[in-house]
Image: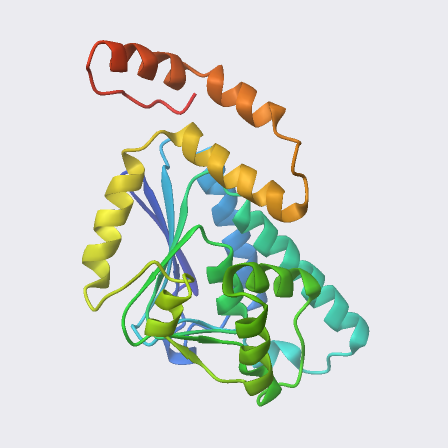
Length: 254
């Protein structure tokens, strides 16, 4: 039986593939759990420098949570579901290495939430983004997810997508900054991006990610531990010496 979520490490890149193409990679509870486990792997394997998220089949990144998971839901179960999804998205946002979402086709509902907490999003030109629940399930988003989408898309576009239930095309996603590149050569673009990230200083990238995460959470001044770790690292000391000697720095991530 084919696994619904695949985790593969090639060199310094850990790739997570949502693997239910027949269901447009709609997420099951088990897939959410395995995504969280992949985050732990990315943080505990010192060889991993980049984490990539993508969908199998070419038609979808993730088309939300599998609707079959919602049978016989009530209000309390809805609260627990949104709380649990929030925990998983927060865990993904806190992964130490850069997280890249490579998006083909539909990126909607829960898929949009997953993509939103990645650090960089690239897509093919046929990608579509949205949360069409006003015309499909009639459920809602938690305020934590609304906060993330508003931060990235802006208030006006976020409420427009939610109220009209329209799907935003790739070119609009690029214009508003949600996607950094949209191309029909997605694999080539992904290879170039991951190669660039793998070559960069791990702790500098971690500090940028962690600082941004704390800013979003409202912890504006709580960064002494970040600064201390980076400036006290072997990477920083070695890079200073390499710069003075006009040599290329070597990054060890500590």
